[in-house]
Image (cartoon, rainbow, N blue to C red):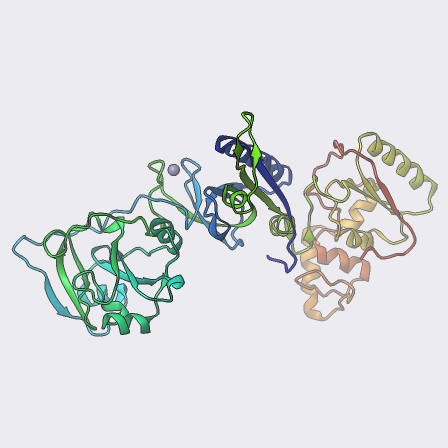
Length: 476
Ligand SMILES: [Zn+2]
């Protein structure tokens, strides 16, 4: 879930030293953890993240884990390590087992018409992607697209552009197939490190370091080389870059565990900005020795609207949202089923007194309506602390008939009953010839007040606000 509106709470820190900046950053992380815990957001992970265009070095995202989230990250269930896909290191899964060709087998050229991808090449050669070197071509968009950089990576892996940027120190983006064809003289799927023309440099990813005999493009469209050996057919590279993308199933970089790809909603992000902005804006201060110094900066943000979306995702169901007690507009919703009755007023006063003494905010509904419509009105609020003080007989009536009878009533829908057009928010409509009040009970399955909320209503809320709803005003 993502809304058009986005507002966030921002914080900035300025420290005299780099150590001070790191200490503030850690304190902010601890505070954010406590905030998200109190918000009842379930599993919230602090995920190492890429600083991206904002700059600086060192950042972390707070991610509420939910399958519906659009943020992808890798985490290790064994040690708790979590990092965004761009930021995560990993231990490579081993290459598929196979027998190594004897030394006298030389590299040879084979025709591979139509093999443009690693999968197509492996299908044609009967090989495994982990025995193929894939050559991908990138271009520097800031240098007018002049000069290409080729990156060789193991065939079952991909190059991550954020990690490549971190490795080479500037932005590189994938070159278009037309540009590759024009400058190298071969199609994208037929490139390889031997005799590659038209590129400024060839970089080797760490994933090819251990590869012995591999297949790669021959730099002529529809041709590949087999049994290419590092050190014999290709000079052993002097340096390797760490640019392959970590993926689900790779080994954890910190422990023997395995990384799993998970999804979540990003709730907040904290950054160590170093001196990037304070230097650029010529901010300075005199330190204790009187010397001029540039402060070290951090910035921190919580997407407040995003938090609400995450709560809707985690605490919502087909009947709407159910607010966690820490941010619910009211902790208790008192529904008076017989407004005007003296007995009800006495009970109400007693209930409100007790709630007030415990500092519980209560919403009081004294509008004249039966328990069914009142229960429906209450739904948009989904107040967490609800206690049913009605006599047992009334509660049972509101709950509707037992399950067995309900099934019988549902069956009578085939006979053609009528539906209540005012009853909008129930997914499956059940038709029934019973009187209206009964049909409402049938449809909800149970018309009793929500029982998922905690039964205790005491809380440490600062003030006891009571709002009374009288007459027939609608809550919506
Ligand atoms: Zn681990």
